[in-house]
Each structure stands twice: as C-alpha cells, then as structure tokens.
Image (cartoon, rainbow, N blue to C red; front, side, top):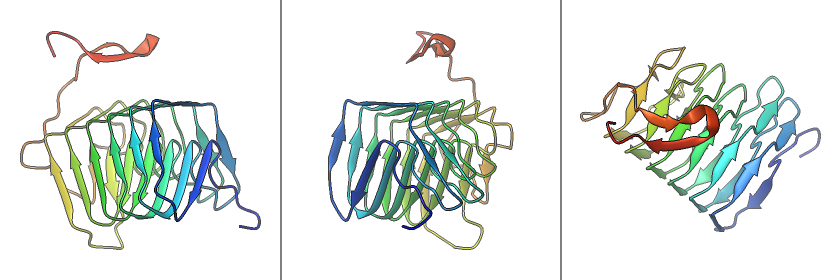
Length: 193
C-alpha cells in the first residue's frame, strides 16, 4: 500500500466484520489511489448496518468511496445514512463485488462519478433514497457489464443526472423524498412522504 491511504476510519482485509450502530464522521484518506474515507474493506464480506457516515472524504486523482469503499467480496449494506461525503468516484460509497445494498439514504454527497453511489459487480440495490448528490446519483462502471438489480429506489435531484450507465429499476421513482429536516441531520421521512 505504498503511497496509498485506505480506510480513514476503519480498515478490513479479507475479514467479515459486523459494523453496526456507529458514527463515522470527519475521517479522510489521501493519495492518488486512496479509498474509503470512512471504511475500506478488501476481499471480505462485511455487514454494515445502522451507521451514520458524515463528512468523510477521499482526496487524490483516483480516490474512491468517500463514506465506504468495498473492493470485492459480498457485503450487505443496509439501514445506513451517507451524507456530505466526497471522493472522485463514489461520494457516498464505492462498491465492487456481489453486494446487497438496501434501505440506505444517500444525500448531499459529491463525486465526479457516482455522487451518491458508484457500483461495479453484481448488485442488488433496493429501497434506497439517493437524492441531492453532486454528480450522478447511481453510476456503474462503463467498462464492465455487471448484473444490476435495481428496484424500489427513490433517485431524485442529483446534479449529474440520476443514473449513469444504468437504467432505473422497474419500481424506482424520482420524487422529493420529503425528509423531515436534512439541514439539521434529521433524515427520517416526513408523514406526507
């Protein structure tokens, strides 16, 4: 890992940790191939549940995964909030592998590619909110042909377009999710959502 920085808040190598009920705030990774401002996992099967990823960053020309970077493996990522994270690729998260990504909120993250979420590999992406990100909401690698199963997501108002190199799922919508008060970190859905 010479000249790289991997996992500003947490690093896992070939493990299968259960990462639950944490706040990853203000972590950073730097260097041209840096990855995972909050969490970096390589060849593992982590379960990442009920965490808040806020103000994490990756700097460098090819930096990826402002909140989370998963390189290969079969992670489960669910019930997390990703907000105000940044990287060149995958502002909220960069996920490569065979993953289940469900019931997460990706808001106000930023990246040149995949402001909310950048994916590569066979993914199940369902029941997520991906809104108000700088860059595309959900992007996949244009060099691969992964099997992507998108369904029941709300992908809305992302400055670089809602989808890049992938089409919406059958039941995906694009509507203001009506979060209670995201400016003050209340990401619950309002009663009229």
